[in-house]
Length: 214
Image (cartoon, rainbow, N blue to C red):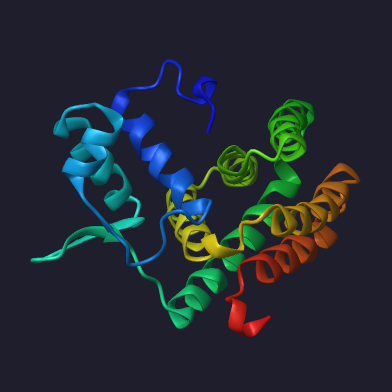
């Protein structure tokens, strides 16, 4: 993560994003314990912003706090991950379908704006920024469908699946994901929403399945 990623962000969010980067890069793995005092000392900050960063990631189900064990990266089993993926696919399919009648020039402009960020971060291979921008890009379809609950559920589930699959977020895996996502993008640009639904289904299933099932 470069320093320009952290400009103008509150310190707890900076720390939370740093921890996310370490998870996505494989430096922190599922089940690994995080010591508040060690992180505070490493980053030369007080305990308070580290504790708040922990809370932010606990709220998003990225970290968990267990009695007598403290805070650790949440461990998600293959079965649980499969359940999340199935729900994620259902949400995405419905959101894309609901967008068909709401698609207009303003929506398309926003689509292109968010897509440009995805393409930029992919080209630069900035893993955490790419993951965040693709999540925001796909969130557009929930926003256009105007379903507040779906927006919230999507954000939570998308982040959980990405953390659970963190060992797969290598440059090769991201390139594979981006290739699949590009087919979805092409279908949307052609206003072929039926095809787009199938493409986002393939993209999601292919990109987040546990290693043992590949």
